[in-house]
Amino acid sequence: MARPKDFDEDDVLNKAICIFWHKGYNGTSMQDLVDGLGISRSSLYDTYGDKHTLYVKALETYQKAAGNQVCNIINNAASAKEAIKQLLELTIKDLLSDEQRKGCFSVNAGIEVAPHDAEVNSMICRGEQQVEDAFFHAIKKGQESGEITNKQDARALARFIFNAVKGMQVSAKGPTDKAFFDDIIQTTMLVLD
Image (cartoon, rainbow, N blue to C red; front, side, top):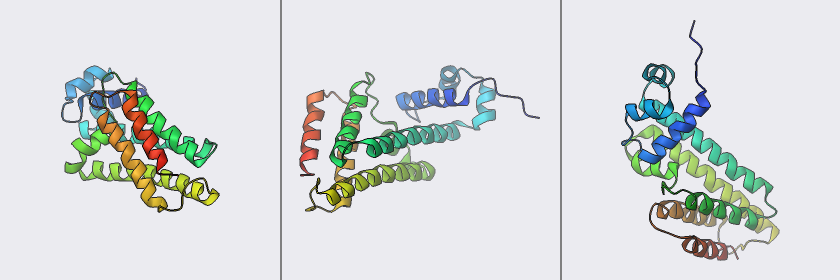
């Protein structure tokens, strides 16, 4: 019979997200994980197998939480444009509140790990498609109500807005201020008129 775990797996995954997000996959050693997670090396191996498996589980947990947040905003906003604006503003708020300038964990994984790892690449593609689809459905709804222009294809607009979000997430790793991001939001919202 397996021994019960003496740690909270959700807590460990949240700590792992922070470690991998801060140091990157390649910059994180097993000792970094043991020290940062507060569990023994044997518990880490028994529960997750290896660093890669833990990384994939941490990325999956991060993407699920981010996807739920996106869906919640889109489903509860007063209008399609309001949903899009709230998502853009949330992105900025998250980026500017991060003093370490880590950017986005998924974007970082897409740049550092996905080109060399089919499993991570597949996860990143699915996560990005989910966000693009959320923008698409909001835009389509806005076009049907007349709130958003029909001059542009809804899928093309969704891809444009998603690309603006990714660009902000990458730009946040360098010196930027709120005015920089506000300009991007204002210009992006104009495309919907």
